[in-house]
Length: 270
Image 1 (cartoon, rainbow, N blue to C red):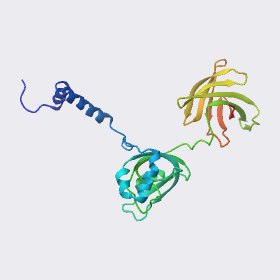
Image 2 (cartoon, rainbow, N blue to C red):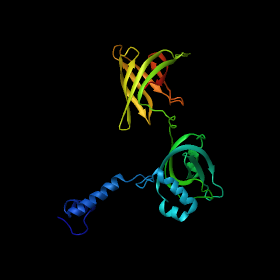
Image 3 (cartoon, rainbow, N blue to C red):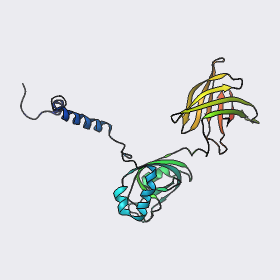
Image 4 (cartoon, helix red, strand yellow):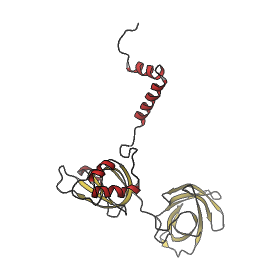
């Protein structure tokens, strides 16, 4: 036996989903999906392009009303180098500023003391990336864009000018065990190919031209981080871990196979 009165929440939802109009059902499902997935709490959907950031700084320095109207609260993604972390004078409650230099302009992350302590060990010049929102200016400084809700992480330093990973590379031995080597013995050749912006380690070959099976090649941000070589004829494997490219566009990879280990220096051939 049923009683009259308010319909329970599950029954009500069932009615709207299956008994209501088609348009209402579509709207309701859309709202439910948004509720399940939400949005990025920092970035949202209104990300300001890097090209427009200088305009935001210009507005901040010359017409703060325009800055607040057109840029305040917009999301920002940027990378650069950490400059310093310092308290902001005469602020109640206490506030700190973390300064980042992107090369073209500077960013000033506004932090609480508890947030600032997370970056106390950052070293000047360290490569970082930041996701944040443009904030109201705090203090008298207008030389940098103020940011709030900052998510800051260490980043890899930029690649040397002119470096490109795609092509053919020759690896020469510069260390075997604890002994340095002349670099005249070149035993490994790499071929890397790029397609649609993605780079892959196509082949690894020994000096005599034999192809070596490649597993778990790791490439990020235009850098070869490492790979595993498998030698079917012996059943052995070698693990390679690569370092960042040098200014002269070469890069080194440490290798280890069984109880043997060393370092190869790779030079670009073509």
